[in-house]
Length: 233
Ligand code: FES
Image 1: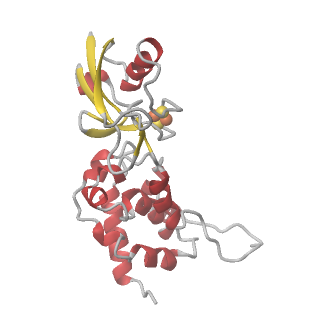
Image 2 (image 1 turned 180 degrees about the horizontal axis):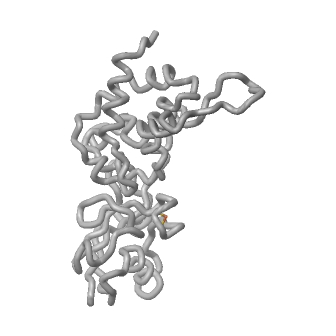
Image 3 (image 1 turned 45 degrees about the vertical axis):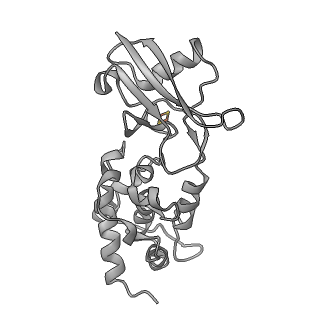
């Protein structure tokens, strides 16, 4: 079949403002949108710019808006999106070129929640054990691949880039609910900020956008509850 792609283009070095280019590509129903972008880049316009690496839904580098919905281009199939496809960069982050956005503001929020394990003893003599039930407590939030599909689908983030956003909260959740971690109170204090958990208005866009099917809104609800029940100095 023939698929028509309308693709957002912007090169800040040469363009006064963004525009859209149209390309027609011969495709199979089971081709991925990333395959079509590769075909355009290889055979029609080598200047088309986008990020991709693994091409298998693992690295999280090719999140983009496909027909108005945040998806990974390597997981979106032609048969699921149709033969007229609009491809745009994710919203709320500055566009660097075409479909590439500046991810630094997103990673600043990620870094702000201490997304690493904080142990107790400095050189423990034995392994810190954890029951299967305790491990299960944060299993869902270990699945994040930092693609930013959730954060950039959130109207609260569009309204203010200072909002920490769903992805950072997912990564905070992963450690706050780890029974071995010692820095939960510190992270909850960070999330109790004016740009923290209470900016979430339970819209569920993040949950719908997540390519790993993480129950993000549920995780944020658990963080809100933990803040209410924790004794924060
Ligand atoms: S290219 Fe790695 S997730 Fe799509």
